[in-house]
Image 1 (tube, rainbow, N blue to C red):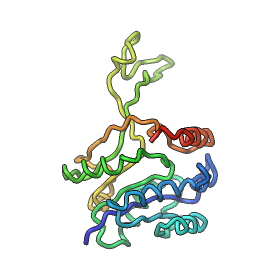
Image 2: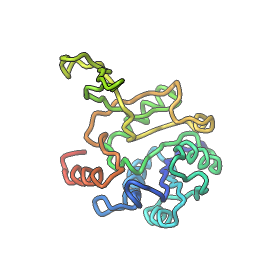
Image 3: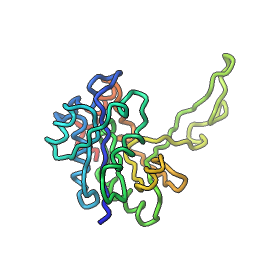
Image 4: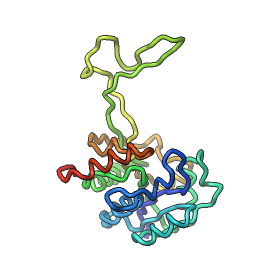
Length: 222
């Protein structure tokens, strides 16, 4: 039977925030939030895998009920893209049809997101789906010491800006065949717009972690 698996890439090294994936958020290691999110969506996800080069992360992943894939050191460097960890993971798994990528640095996700996203993905037979959010900033470039607006004209109102979006990292759903071809996002990918406070949480510094703690302390945010 073809399966849908969640893969959580969590290497041990992190320069800007050492041991990032083990930092506590709401009394849980960062990685545990993504594991628990996958477990809460057991109706969609058949198995949960953490791919890591760290024995400490491995033990915590097992403690919280995930399976572990030992990631080779050569696929765990600072400059190694996520796709290589995913390709390695599915190369040793059997009968995987769909991969749900959950990044541990995006630990907070709307509860209804998985069901909404997976339904859209399946009903439309997309190759992949990823979440995006609109950016309302006035952006520009500095060229030869002069500022040149990128997505607006000087004096233009913010609400009239040309719509621009960013990958917020909350969720990626991809057919395994696309990952085997070396991609997470393909031409037949659907950008699911999510405008939620959690979309602005991507932990790479201690300040990001403090902001996540603040949001987690607000029970009215779901």
